[in-house]
Image 1: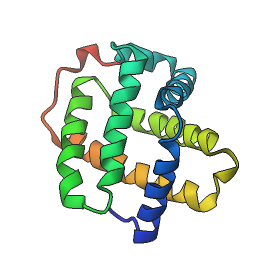
Image 2: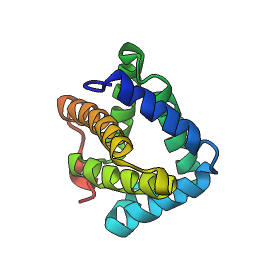
Image 3: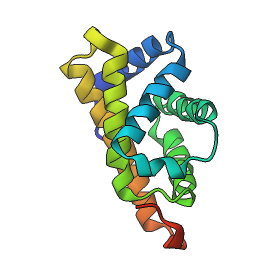
Length: 150
C-alpha cells in the first residue's frame, strides 16, 4: 500500500495471522455493532445478513493483507471494491466512520498486544486503502444520489 514501509507491512501481515485464530464472525459482530452504535443510519445500507457481510469483509481484508506488498495486484481489487461501494450508496464521510469502528475493533481483538506500532501501522494501512477508494469514488461517473443515505 502506498506510503507503508516494509516493516509496517510485515507487522500488519503478522498481526492479521493472529486474528485468523479468532472466529471472524465474532470480530465481524463487534465491528458492525460498533459501526451501527456510532452511526445507526448506516444500517440502512446493509441488506444481507451480518454473517454474510462479515464473510465478505474479512474475505476482502484477507486478499488485501496478502497483497499489501504487491501494489500492482491490489490496486485493481481496490478499484472494483470502491465502485461496488459507490453502488451501495457509500459516501466519503462513511470511510471515517468505518475506519474508527475498524481500528476500535482491532484494538479490542488484540487486547494487551495492541500497541503504538501496531496502531500506527493499521491506521496507515486503512488510511491508504480508504484514500484510494475515495479517489475512485470521486473520479467515477456520478450516480443517482436521490436514495443517498446521510
